[in-house]
Length: 98
Image (cartoon, rainbow, N blue to C red; front, side, top):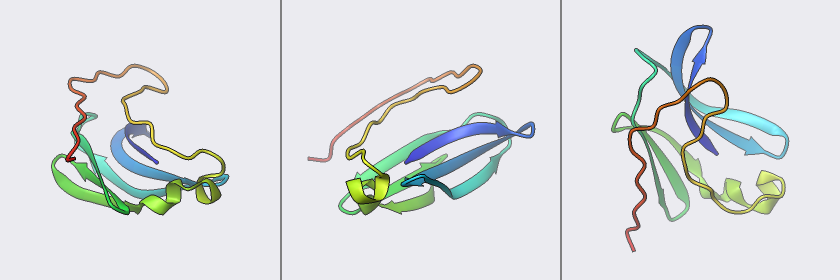
């Protein structure tokens, strides 16, 4: 699963993308007034909740991370990254409720 901000045709948008074997599915996409956003992921039980600027944005079943569904990778890697161009990350914070 990926939660990201991108530019598409000159417009900024946020998206949640899920991989099912070789298929990429965008679970949610929303336009942004500017290419800045607060992205938050909450993992609990069998759901991943994605918040965009503090508001519920998407929910994804954690079963999608199984070897059978994801196509070989089992596990979670969390962290900011940049695929093309430049990115600026002001904060990155991980906490556990346990």
